[in-house]
Image (cartoon, rainbow, N blue to C red; front, side, top):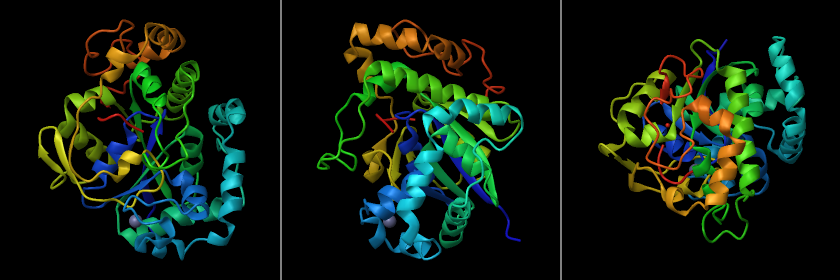
Length: 335
Ligand SMILES: [Zn+2]
């Protein structure tokens, strides 16, 4: 019996800093930044989109090795199966099963291939921790129930007014030259998605005594290296070495991450600083709309209602379950 594969699953809403966190984590020994593995089958295998290293996925030597262990001829069917199993309308039933102590996402014949993906990644990279930044809570619940996986959930939360602003930016799926754009939901929808995914993340894992860590983007950008150390400690990884060249600067080498925000292709010196353009440029109407729709979550995660200075570190304004200060947040405008 092989030891389980430890997966650090980045859960929560989109545009919460997960791409930078994943890339930075991938610079430490023993950590493999896999990116958004739920998209491996469609965007990686079927569409052959670029790996983090810049090569089309099927030309990347590392993924070439991993793919030999996978049923790549069935990638399109596996991708379609995942989409069907992870639909938003299945959420009430998923939470009901979770409450009753049952497997949140029912077993499926493709689960063997999904489990093989994580095993193969760990084997071919030699990593002790595989970082999966898929974010979608139902997929995290699915992965956590796969055989041979030890799931640790890093819940990244960012001010919903900032994520709504970020969602509206026009960006190519794989960089500025990509004609296929990242999705751009209207602000009301971005706000509701933020509330749903962050609430569901807390419902699924917030009570886990050891398997859940919440980090706010704003706290991470305020205090980057100590926050990264907390995340590494939670993942069970030695924080020695690493990419920090200054308190808020990292030197990034290319990763082999799949899908995710185009910023995953950035290399060289990168500042880890808060992107606060939204404070100035988000319209009053949008600000009020997002604030109203996410009021419950703002309180839970310790964000102020008024547009002002940054929220106090620690995220305790609304109490909520911030798991004994295990709450922390990452920089750049993000995915
Ligand atoms: Zn690669």
